[in-house]
Image (cartoon, rainbow, N blue to C red; front, side, top):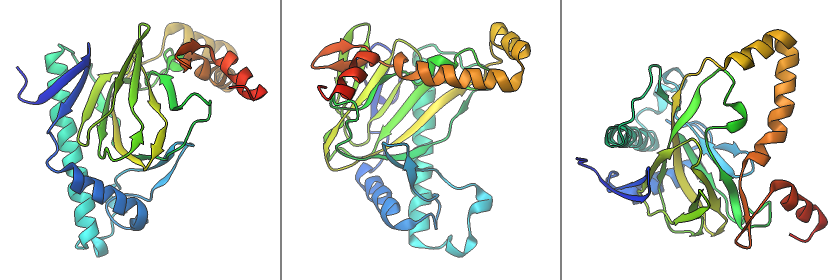
Amino acid sequence: MSNLEYIEIYPNVDVYRNVLKDPKQMYDVMKQSEKTSEGKYFLNTWDPWAHFGTYTQKKHPHEISQDVSEDEMFIKEEAFVYEVEDAYNKVIMDYVERHGIELPEGWRFSGCSYSKYKPSLDLMNNRMTMQYHTDHITSQKDMPGDKFFITCTMYINDDYVGGDIEFFVDGKLINHKPQAGDILVFPSTEPYYHGVKTIEENEKFFVRNFIMVPSDGTEEWLANQKRYGAYKWAKMELERIEYEDPRNMRYIQDGVPVMFDDLKNKEDAGIA
């Protein structure tokens, strides 16, 4: 039996609560870091995160200047990071134990990405900032390399309008508006498609982390690499991935599932 508080919003999709001591204080640190730290302290600079917003990660020890290690903001960022990492360790160990998941040899955390969504982002004109997707990238499932296995997202604030996370699983929509301090854990694989609704007001701060598992690649993929040669095969794979990735997502417009090409055609025609 779990010693942590959680709710199940869908089978294998759990929301942990009251693991963080003071989400509001953590929110203040994230906001201050993003606005003023400029990478001088425990966290790196906040860089653009594709078109979604900004993000940062903690510095490697050799990147940290001892000249700032006694500064108030350094101490705040360091304490913030350690609390986040400790919470992830507690939650993920609880999750895998309760669900009877055996983590394979060589598993690891991806490392925390401290992130911010910007508001009013709706590129496909369907009130979604991020379309329904799985974090286990379907187009790359046969390739060698680490794969996303379990998704763990920590929500730091909730003083924004919109920005719900919504699952689209087996034809069902499961909506969740995170509370500050929620830690959401679920499989990164199919059928756990999930997306993020457009934020109407304010900004959304959160932390992304994943359990990664190693893969040697399928025999067919490795045989094709040998057949075509590493350079040509890499180029072929890049073209395939660029084509498949948007089509592997799921899209909904006006409550109706639509295909990527249909949605894109409407967008291009100015009628979406």
